[in-house]
Length: 355
Image (cartoon, rainbow, N blue to C red; front, top):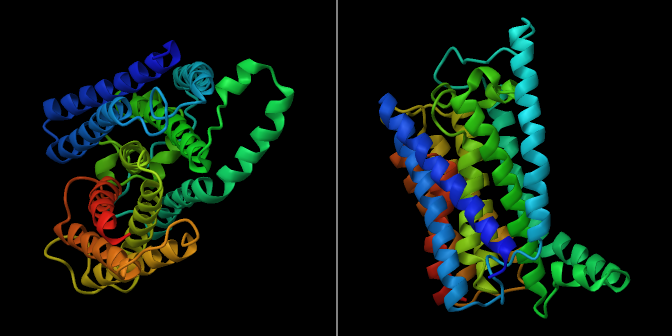
């Protein structure tokens, strides 16, 4: 294992341990909901990294040291550049506050639910998941062809750094892991600052899309979404070709099912589910939309993998039922994490039988 792979592994475990530290602080504060959510994120993150390392060393399907990071130098370069820049922003915010120039006031919702406008903004951020799908099956191939072209003009050092490999899906897998990985590190760094040093948090405008319970010790929904996506990519992306298909199907169903359930429930929902803010109308809408998008993704990707034994119907149906069940239970764990992780696990093992 080369030195850059070791550094990346240590870096990810460091962030995992810091997640556990934040979880410990929520336990100490007595915030039960935040503790459960933060603990779930920490456990999923650390376990997915560990299992990935085990799989790499046992089956090694991509001939890589760790999650196929041919962009290891770029990964480390991002960290080296990003951390100081973010630290400068924190120092600048601290100076502004000391001078009485607070940049953006912390937004605190007056009610349990966000205003509809901010809830829409919040859900729109989830559409970034579509970018992952495009990188897996469209943009990744275009970038791969670009690298193949420019490698002829670069020294041999860069050829090793951007190893293309024989399998056409290997490069796109590498690219997705890199992009989601650097995004997660950036978001975690910012959210740790928001939780531990909220006064000096330089991105206070982001607080406008956080619910009241998320403004303090609880990890933000964007963190749960990022950890969920990164974890399932580590766990199932290695299993070519079925892994990427299940990853993309799960993420699309989770995002669109959750978004439609929330927004439709708020706009036309009347019948509440127990004493929660969720409605049966939203629940049904989420199930239907999740099923439809599951079918759409499988149809769009049929040139890569073709379901058999009615898999085109059964796999989205299983996923839609799971989404409805999790939505009905209304767990303390953020939906962005629970939907993605539970859904991908069940769909992966179901797809083994149906593809």
